[in-house]
Length: 144
Image (cartoon, rainbow, N blue to C red; front, side, top):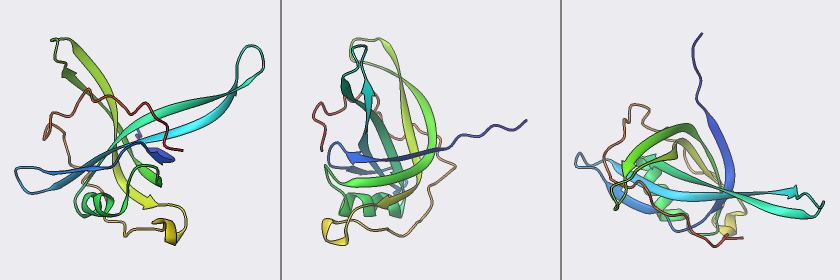
């Protein structure tokens, strides 16, 4: 049986996007998204549970994300989940999960920078390794 790897997230940017270019000239934009859900703790009190996702998008969409999105903006991301391994500054091997986006849409009102951006489709042949970006800490402040 074939395997399937797809993730869909609607959340808020935790920091401004970071745009870089590979040595081959391909735009790569990295950003983080926070999602929050209400959960009840053992005593029955409602608690917010925030999950952070690292996202990478390539090509024209990367440039559009960098141009139009900023910390706190709501976004829809569709892509695939990938696990990477890196060595931290202390020499310890670490693992991280990252979403490689194939579609990014801006949400919210048009006056708020929302709306759709043209779907350019992600580069599904991306094999990683262009940047050593592993191990970045996520922002502690929830942007909403």
